[in-house]
Amino acid sequence: MATLQTVELEACTITFFEGDIVHTHFREHRIVSPDEVQLMFDAIEAERMGRKVLLMVSVGEGTTMSNEARAHASSPLSNRLIAADAIVVRDFGHQLAANVFVRHHKPGRPIQMFPDQESALAWLAQQHHLVDRA
Image (cartoon, rainbow, N blue to C red; front, side, top):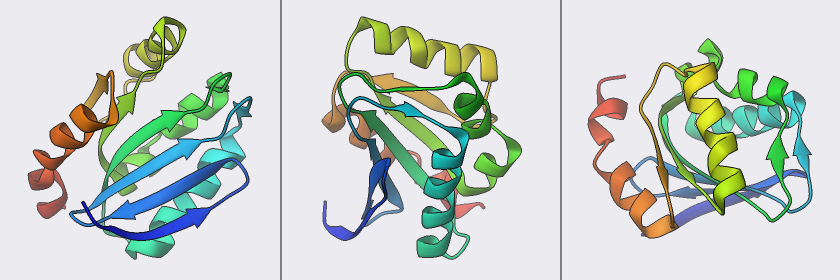
């Protein structure tokens, strides 16, 4: 899959791929804040000019999102930008946190968890219909 562009922010790296897929990787040893989630949204919106993306999210060792950041990541604003999420889970603790995001915050879009980037990308590639109808 060809990389079109990479944007470096303080909290994360955002890589734009062909086929409407975007990978956000939050750097190691962080507690991601709502402001950092918003900066990610702003970068995606600026690059995509409002077109929705299929988002793969991964986090570095020792990184988690604050409850407020998870709430912001699942807000109606996020649904305007993100058609589907593939969360790459690093370990059991991270899987628990991802489950809280999915079950408690209930973003209004498809979300799946995966053990690796390859399976996450394969699933996202099957979700293009969600972008095309937006």
